[in-house]
Amino acid sequence: MVRYIFMLLLMLACGLQILPAQTHIPATDRIEALAKELYRKDLSDSAKYGINKEIEDLLKPLIAADSAPELFDSLTFLKYLSPANNKFELLTWAFPVSDSRFYYSGIIHLSGGDTRGDTTITMHASDKIPEVNKPYPLSQWPGAVYYKLSENTWKKEHHYTLLGWMGSKTGEDQRVIEILKFHDDSLPEFGAPVIVTGNGTKQCRMLFRFTDAVPFHLQFEQHPLPGKTKKKMEMIVFNELTGNNPKMGRMFRAPVPDYSAFDALVFQKGIWHLYKNVDLRVDTRHLNNKPPKELELGTPKLKNK
Image 1 (cartoon, rainbow, N blue to C red):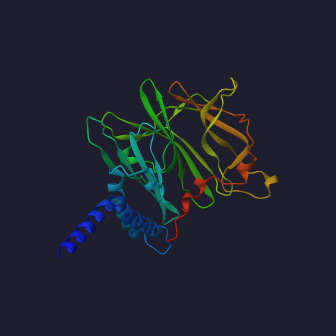
Image 2 (cartoon, helix red, strand yellow):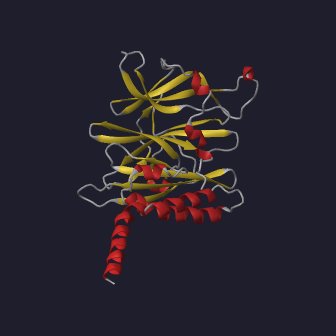
Image 3 (spheres, rainbow, N blue to C red):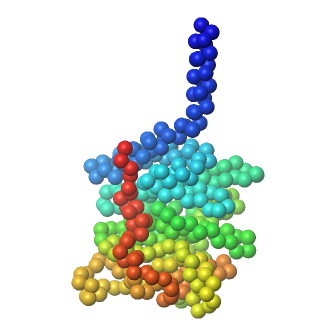
């Protein structure tokens, strides 16, 4: 009898030791299985919205529990971002709905620091097409799947620049350069007039619409500042967009990315300044042959269970 009790206590003790390591495994499996349903063509929009709500309810306690980034990276239908200062964590994803549209969801978890508690906020995109000169509060989030983040500081003011994917109608695709900032009440706002284009006007974001038949390059990269020394600086590099060229042998429904001409935004004194026709000093021929990974966001690669 004593031996039986000892073995029972030992089994319980071992179970308690391994429980924390297994806590999130069933949740991620369930989330991944639900995400597959969001891409079924035979499922109604209302059914997808219900499934998406269940996914949000499963994700929120995970991100609030300060789970490791690797946990979210294992979920193939969404993108996870967090700046170096760990002020926030951001999850975004999208799924197709009727009329060739996409529905965007997001969760942002704010670190409260020493003075206030953490906050977890669910984001749903507005149906309106975002304007380049308008900032939007959380309730009017423009919606995108953000795949890259850069943290920029000027005079103690933090701006977080996001590169994002946006779906479009058949034959087209979209990308966005979005600015994220936080007010004193920690509420996020999307868009800030810190992008200066060639005509000297400031705008809150940059939108790119182009044919989905040709990859569009939009990334943070290190290159020498145009017209300056060879010291490399971080910049946002992207293709110039051109009209249809009969020499290409076919006509496209939207502007075409030009792989012989690149522009860039460079962050200087709190402003992203536009530089045209940037000499990248790198071999860009491979960019035509291998589409950037973010092009696959419209049809995410979900693991086979």
